[in-house]
View 1 (tube, helix red, strand yellow):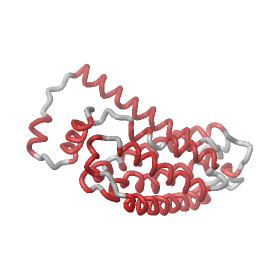
View 2 (tube, rainbow, N blue to C red):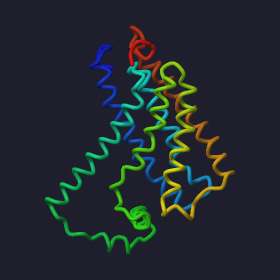
View 3 (cartoon, rainbow, N blue to C red):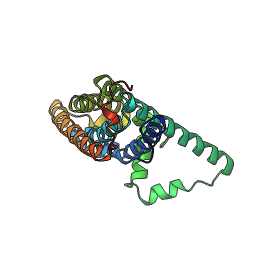
View 4 (spheres, rainbow, N blue to C red):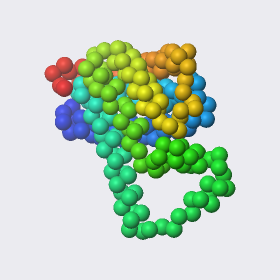
Length: 228
């Protein structure tokens, strides 16, 4: 809110929104372990949490920046930030070459989140912490939100985002060998869809209310139709 409406303000909001969305993404990551442990409707925990938190962030920034493309820009930004984190981590390990002590830690607490992450990565044939999969899942939902235009039709945008996020998350996680034992039944999927849509609407509603408070007194850039 320091900047007057314009490119500088939009850029600052987009940068802050990217980090906010990235933070919510990190917080939602452990939901995959919930799917691994419990299955059923909990298979879609990541989508249900994302329906609330991701929708809130994307609708909020679409309205504050006044840019129709804001949701997709933020989703792409999160992918780039996560990829850069992986790159910096690889460089650090290559330079420092630390002595691994992971095996002892895993043996001491085999039920810990880090132990579960390693077990899931082993079953998937990957390395923990190096996957971009969960960061790529929101890209298609965000693109569809852009088409619907969250600035003007936030309810429809929230519903489209939530439904697409559930589908994208379900297909992506359903292909993972580590979750083969936890695949949901059709009834679980329908219940998860209802919960995800409700969460997305709640997130969108909160975003609209907060945007109304934060919009500059001189006018709401989120309602400027010419800006895309």
